[in-house]
Image 1 (tube, rainbow, N blue to C red):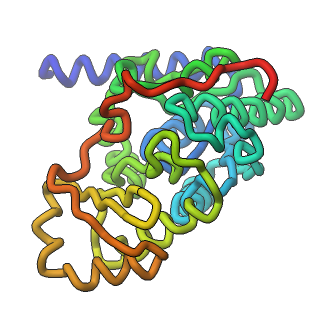
Image 2 (spheres, one colour; image 1 turned 120 degrees about the vertical axis):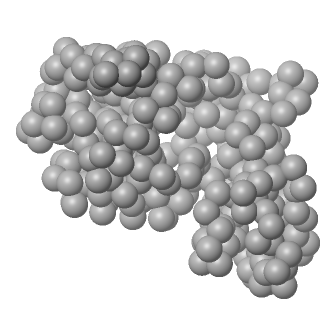
Length: 283
């Protein structure tokens, strides 16, 4: 057996052991690659009676992600619950500071911790993985404050590990592009509003219907900045008129193509100069 296979096998066994240690779990379940995978493995290891995958419903979550969460749960026997979250009511979140994710996750983990207490589940867990460790993740602070565990991160599992095992398990999300919340399409400092989020979602749904998979529509007021993954950017010129119309139909007046293409962490470029909003205390 190759060394890489042994290492991967060790990670898998560590993950199973961590889940057994958790006992019974409420999972923050977005419908993304990591949370779907974690919910499936947790159900296999602990049994459905000891797992509850919970999706937070809000304007900041794309409708297709909610659909994916529901469909995968139904198809793979994962107990599922949807709860409404109200991060939009927090003016600190709506102001869209660079630590916006803290306020969103604080709301989410507060709700899920309540669900766990009410239903007798021992541990709340999330889908953070080893590749997330060095990223700008203010939401991880909220997770720590609510005693949320990250079994994938603890087991040392990378996104590549997760995709590989997801494919073996037959999960339809195994090759799904990363899909953070819609608020991540708004540059820091531009207020998060339901109208802006819906505008972004309409534009992105239209582009998905044109066959684009890995991209972002960044909201700059009347201007939409389109980031397309380098592997797909060559598809834009032949579809220029349709792309332009699709994004304009969502309510933007101009569409600009970012020639650097989509890259992870683009929102955080130049972050050092950005002000943070105080975490904790009165709203």
